[in-house]
Image (cartoon, rainbow, N blue to C red; front, side):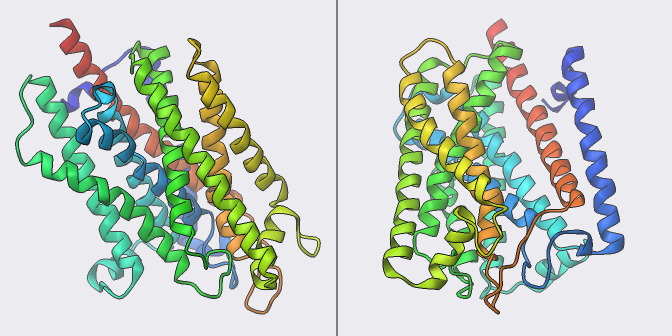
Length: 386
């Protein structure tokens, strides 16, 4: 089936070729980073995690969201998700690959990866994060590819696939929970020192990932004539709306706890993000834009599921995706490191090389997802033509 990924119309070939440009630019910037060190990034003594780790955290949520189509399809026999469950699994595969690449570039030198592999530390949360991420990647790749091959040959999946499917459901929750523990394990960072961090991560994951999947399905319908089914999109829309409501509720809880308790260390991070602190207000417009889009998307999602047009649904899903990216891909790191151990404001902004390297990784992910989806659509076209 792999040969199907490299055959397509001129528009498909141009898209694939166009993705190679940001990949090449990102690779060139990464080679420059290898030569000059992480000093070309915006990280410093006080800000030891930056844009790379933020994108890693966000993409872990996108990967975990595959469970929102796997669980109802395999456990509750919701046949409506039958046409998109493999798309969700391949989206998870792509997201995990991008997660691993962001950690790879964050380590600085490629040889440092060997320290993680040759000298594992089971007492480290990072070690377990590596285990759950790579395990989740393998699970979704095996499940997705095996079920697609069986679908192509009109045969039932082998019996050993079902236990893997059941295992992938709690595993999806585990990858984002363990990632949250990475942050919770740093007691000096008050924004992350909360038991709500893992639930917040999961709430945003169950909103952002399905939102991206809906956008991809609508794009495939426009460009390739693939119909995911209106009922599947409707049910995913409901999931996204409720997940965003829960996420906003958790944010309100964080504000209440910080300001009602009157503990300055818990207040200052939120002040920095949403109101500015000591003249530092770089993140304020981003965070309020994130909240505004999150709040605006909910009524649109709940209303769009009753209409025939997909435009409001696409707009709402776009707002959900951007809102969660601003929250986790920008505000999470900047807010957590905002107050240094010396109680000074530590501003952080990604540098152009950081952004270009990350864009190169996103382009590589888009290329991988394009090839995987091309295989799926080719198999479906073959089956429809029989």
